[in-house]
Length: 73
Image (cartoon, rainbow, N blue to C red; front, top):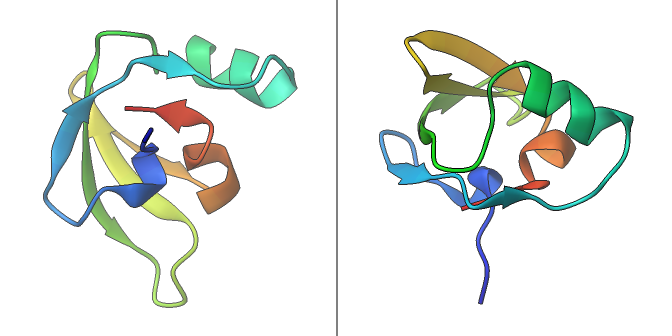
């Protein structure tokens, strides 16, 4: 069973395996440094659960839940 970055618990980290879809969002994720092999850690979420906040490559990144679901870990 595959997991996505959206499935990470707060404080949990994992390595990115791939970006699932090939569309504009996936291209933007790659441009922001979400590439295979990089370690990504979930820092938290907004009060209503969207967007999610992650840390990777020394910076923080907020992603909508739907975008985070495209990041396979």
